[in-house]
Length: 119
Length: 346
Image 1 (cartoon, rainbow over the protein chains, first blue to last red):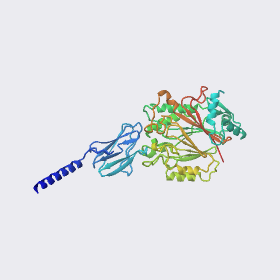
Image 2 (image 1 turned 135 degrees about the vertical axis):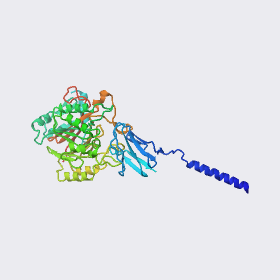
Image 3 (image 1 turned 60 degrees about the horizontal axis):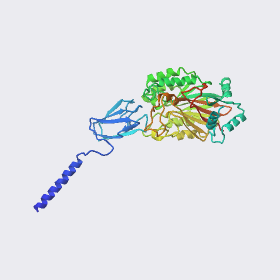
Image 4 (image 1 turned 90 degrees about the vertical axis):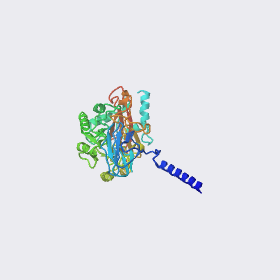
């Protein structure tokens, strides 16, 4: 019947709209960040990379800045990048051209670990 | 002597070896062994007069001797915790030079520099020129490996060493081994000795009499103090298994900028104060790193470690002294502590 069809169509449309809205990138509540390609920043302080896991799109540049009173480095475990030592207020940047998960650590204080997820 | 001072000494010496021998018993044993040592108080710490005498006369005859450990000079560091680490290093050197019995040599257990910069190593070398003790042994800390995997460090301090800077030498019957546990550190790990060095160590110790006193020195502690802060060495168990058979093993470390010690069987572990800045006790702060103290307290939490080897008493005494106060001063050596008196077994 016509009314039924209209009702079903309307209901389906609402469902589709709702799903589209849900998928449209609501703010993430996980621990990882969703920064834009322009400003992916990792702050180093108190022997911690913050955020510990950062997610960026392919082509993004991540900038590590050391705010600690002790020098640190950022070295990927697979050899992709290796910063010079960063003293307080010094930075290191790396542009991720390939997708993947890049585990890294501070080669001076190896208990400090982090991850860059490039997708 | 005043009761409080006597009590202090008794407390410190009370059963340090867990062998049921307290201070009075210790002195009895020493007398029985024919050492003729006379322990007196000098500024609150026991000083052996006979030792001092023997030191002069018999020095060089395979007899008693002492050496000093300094650590973590961090030349180049200039933050509030200590804006002038070169000055406090100089104070430490002056203190060593003023000791009534001069050490045969100095051992620096690493973190010579803050950023592995040539200028920092230059400044360190300049300061060390003023030390009366001309022989200085080094092992690197992680701060000395920051550029070029420690090439700078090795060029300057690596003569006669192997690999990343390990070495061994004998001095008046005591076997010294300098180990490097700050090279090729793995993500998520602590200090690391590595396969090559462990192989070398096993070989180095092979065939030595078990009655040879052994002193191991390395930057990061060779026992696990606080894993969250990386205060330990992942593969030290293997190294320690090689020294298990020896009658006396003393392990001297730095890295944590505070005194910690442990005795496990015949192995005594000891970490030294820094000459640059203190660090918090494990877990008492969000992280390790420089700890600021009131300016007038700084010299009390920095210091040197004097290690005395007594042949006739067959014991190794480890005495820590803060920079505030001097061993020869009558007014006392506030905070000096006799940490380990280790009678050599076997």
